[in-house]
Each structure stands twice: as structure tokens, then as C-alpha cells.
Length: 68
Image 1 (tube, helix red, strand yellow):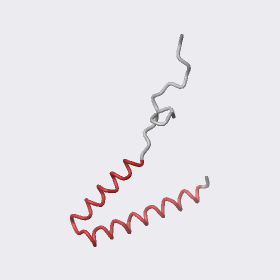
Image 2 (cartoon, rainbow, N blue to C red):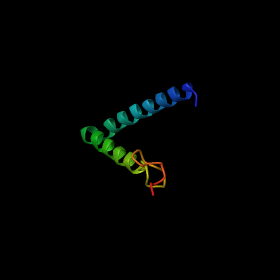
Image 3 (cartoon, rainbow, N blue to C red):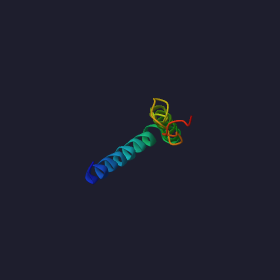
Image 4 (cartoon, rainbow, N blue to C red):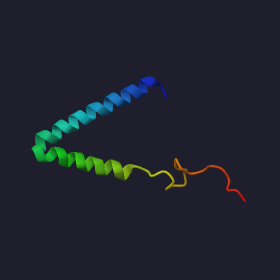
């Protein structure tokens, strides 16, 4: 993956986040800002895959064979 793609994706993500937060504040006022932030936080947590849950080793799993 090239560095240019990384920076472009980062800039695009920041732009989308800025636009969404502005829209949430305009449409929802002071209640809409934390409500939309909470909704997006729950969405991100739901889309997160826990390591080890789908057969891939987690950070604390030992990759060596068990000692017999």
C-alpha cells in the first residue's frame, strides 16, 4: 500500500467526519451532537471484530504447539 493512499484515505475520513458533525449540530442542536456521536460509537463497536472470535489468534494467544 502506498503512502499516498494512506494520506488520501485519512484526509477523506476527516472531511466526512467534519461534514457529519456539522450536519448533526445543525439538525439536532446540542442534543443531536452527542446522540449522533453515541450512535456512531455503537456502530463502530458493532463492526469491530474481536481477535480470536473467528479463529484468528489474538495478541495473547501462543502460536507454539502445546508441550506434551
